[in-house]
Every structure is written in structure tokens, then in C-alpha cells.
Length: 138
Image 1 (cartoon, one colour):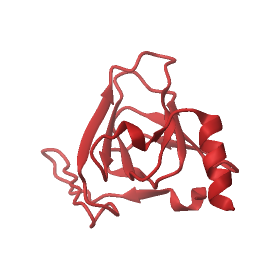
Image 2: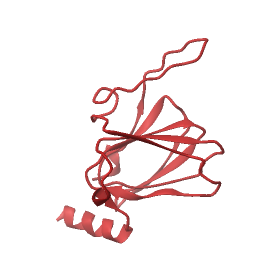
Image 3: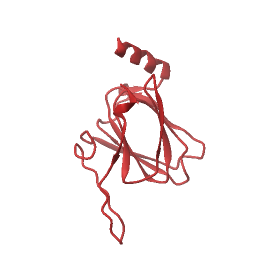
Image 4: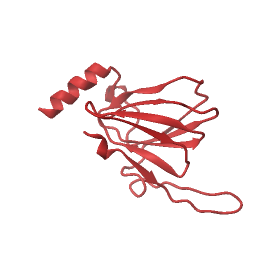
């Protein structure tokens, strides 16, 4: 898997003087059925999150409040993406290593996932991930 499959996706934004509205529909705005929703918040300054790759689960990350960076690795390429708008998000296909840092004060990251939580779907050791990527290339 290479990083070209990771992409920023603009979500619908309905402007209203009383407050804007954005909505997300699985398979329409994100390329999967949404089976799990979770969010990160109260991340201490200087902390990092993620540090893993998923074997089969797809995810979509949104900065609901504040901002943060997502650093992506494919085993060959690296890319840093800054998220700071609640009306767009980052699609992550399986087998992309991700790390998150540079959280602003009060930031909230909403994550949509294509699968329920399954610890066996995770690569948490980068060397193990690289070995799997090498085997996948054979």
C-alpha cells in the first residue's frame, strides 16, 4: 500500500448564521460502512498518539476541534498532514502506519472505523509492520 491511497476528503458543509452543520454518511462521504466511532481528547501537550498500522480496518480522522498532525508511513514514503477543519477529514486505508502529534490545546480527533475494535488487527511494532510490508511486496 502506498500513500496515494490516503486522501483528504471534504465533507458537506451547510452554512447557517446560527451555526454550521456537517454530516457524514458511510459509503457516501467515506469509502466504507461505519462500524465504530471513537474520539481522542485531553491529549497532553507534547504527547503522541497512534503509533500503529491496521491490517484490514479503514479509518477516517477529523479534527473536530483544534488541530493535530498525522504522520503517515508506507514502509517507503513518509507524509505529514495537518488537520484543523471539522468539515474535512483524512481517509486511511489498511496497512498504513500512522502517528499523531502536534495536538493543539483543546483538540478533539473523531475517528470513524470500518470494523469493530479487534486487537489482532493491529501492528504495534514498526519492525513487524515493515516485515509484513516486505512480504506483501513479494
